[in-house]
Length: 49
Image 1 (tube, rainbow, N blue to C red):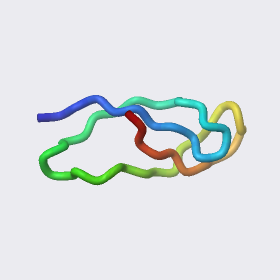
Image 2 (image 1 turned 60 degrees about the vertical axis):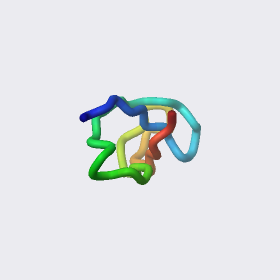
Image 3 (image 1 turned 135 degrees about the vertical axis):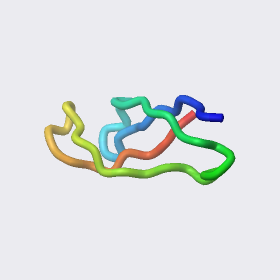
C-alpha cells in the first residue's frame, strides 16, 4: 500500500514536498535532491513523519 510522505530540506528544514512510496518494498527513509525555494538551490531532501 502506498503512503503519503513529506520531504524536508536538509539545510533550512522547510517541508517543501509531498510524495508517495510503497512502505512494504522500501522501509528505509527516502532521500533525494530537490530544489528548495527558500534556499534558492538544489539541496538533499529527507523523508520526515
